[in-house]
Length: 187
Image (cartoon, rainbow, N blue to C red; front, side, top):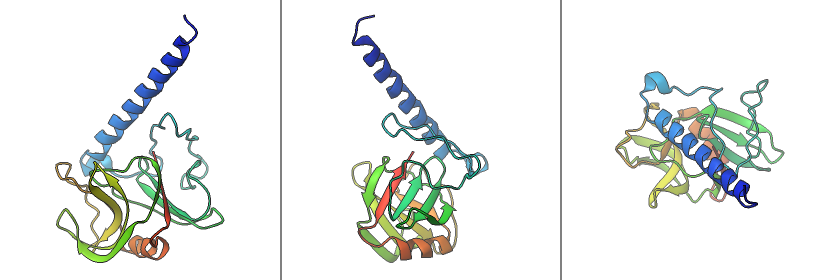
């Protein structure tokens, strides 16, 4: 093999792993509720540049490794879970969420805007909307709670960006994630 060949092979392998992980996530996100219920031990494929560490088996609700430092909201796409993390790096709250039809890419974001009560793009009345990213070019992504308490799987044919949570969790998010707060999305 030529000298540069091993780098090319490694790059192609990493790209294939990322593609398979993305397709697996998309399939699970669009599965019926009966087979797509969130679990605390769900695993996800790490992107080639995230260097994600294995899940802590003794502490399955521990803040994901490599999610940054300081006060932040951590959103784990594969686990369908959010952590509210204080300035000392301790989770003050963690809870399951229902991902939106469109998801942001893993990375670091900041809360850009908030709304107390509006109608979601899916027609559901929602509260405590905390927006932090854009998906698919022009769809805002944010956390919210349905006022009727529902956390239904999103219609995959609609371009929606609402990450749904329970109302009490929405209250906690609203208090914690003010404009400018850091949101870290991990695979």
